[in-house]
Length: 492
Image (tube, rainbow, N blue to C red; front, side):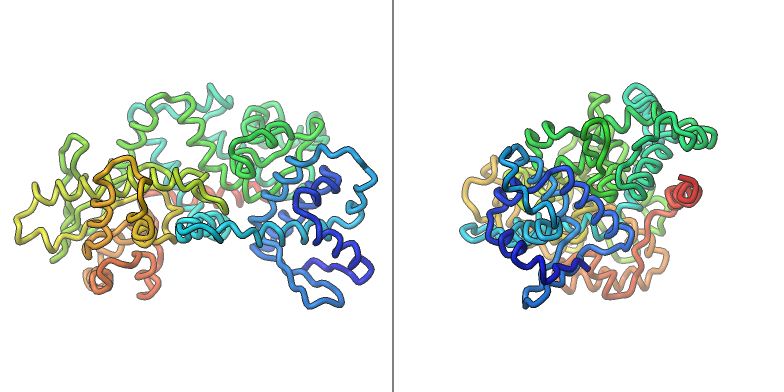
């Protein structure tokens, strides 16, 4: 809990009356960033997303959320160049600044004149869920490691060696080491280079030497100037959570470093492998085939030219048509202030295109009598949409004029919305569905619940209702990350 004491109430009221911009201009930037980072570390250690604030002699009961912190860091840096130090008085109680600024951020009324409420709320929820669904991050990391090491046409070790001077095994040890240092220290790597501590850790693993870590640290750190000019705005910290201040670092939130376990790998692949997007599509399709093949289902891979779905799956009386999509939800969509144009592009290129491919396949693969009973799944690689009802989001925007490039998109989306045998699912949901196929009775209960809701619900909700545990694909080593953490956590 943060405590605003009675003697600081005047200062607190002054802070609350200021605009967010003026408040940041009157606060010493580096001290405020260190204060934010310290709070983020405590919240991460305690595994809490919200922290309550006690204000003496007041009915006000503010909260500070973990997802407020990097936004406030961005704003502090963006408006740091005010030079009249007579007004830097707020620095003597940084909690007053922190609580007031967080409250202003939370209360920004960006929905008041906007009819597209659900996409905005979805963006906000997607950002918050990043900090609350650690199990999804873990399963995604294990899946990524598995797929990238089994891909024809992609030499992940060569990409990593040419970009950050290590192979994949060394990469995992290095990025976990950086995370643990950021988790444990207010100023990570301060006085580390050349120290006895560094020498001891190098003996444990050469990757723990600062010179070996530098290429990765360079990829995930930024200067004040980079932050202030970034088109990503506060979301720059999802790519670069370490702030370089006079050759020392402040990690704004160790949890943001954890997000990089996966996203940095993808970033390096896209940057150093020209055809990665096509290769990634093919390798994910192969992975889905492997997941289905390990289940109790029988299946057929559809040979096509990109205009039809990917798989037909049979189990008992159920037939499933699956179209696989690898595109990731861009970080600008997972935001308090989502870029709706990017969201509409995602809906058009992924949802509408996938459903069009499924419709084309229905006519080719099934008789007219069979068609009405086929369950259609648009299968997304991106796990972040698991707690977002895509059908409801699509329904809320499909009627809006001039938001899609193709004139037929609204019609296709309307068909998808009204199709009581069509769902949007993530790979994690699909892995669970395939895992429970070993028990025909349980599998049938899921399909029955899905269809009784006219597919206007998500698989993850049905799993929760039926007390079915979320089950990752068992062909993967789902423990390597925990084993590495376990081996390293007490030695760093």
